[in-house]
Image (cartoon, helix red, strand yellow):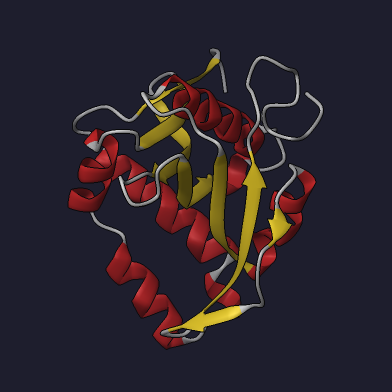
Length: 176
């Protein structure tokens, strides 16, 4: 890819490209080990409307990593008054052709910075990670917060990370 990688909020009109990216990554990494029921459940959760609502909800965000305006990674973090200073990573996907380039870590750092800029700064992040993503999350400082769960055919592992500061070098928990 030519051009610089940029981390930024999802733009209006990009939901289709972001959904396509998520589906490519899901089909490559998660779907092969998931039941038909789990695949149907996942596909039912992803929508343009949900992305748009999350992108504009106070404290929440949908951020993309893009080369020349082409999204190659996405993170969506939801925050509600009920969760207070805790954010939940609803999705984090990187295009299969760009995995291993540090884009997931960069998206996580960008989301943490976004969370600290909110009126109520971010204190912690949670995620219900697919079983094959647990190693990534643990490598950036997340710790298991419960046993593996199954919901409508999707197996997930709940993880949590305390987010102290973005002023230090360790905002994503990876020493960078």
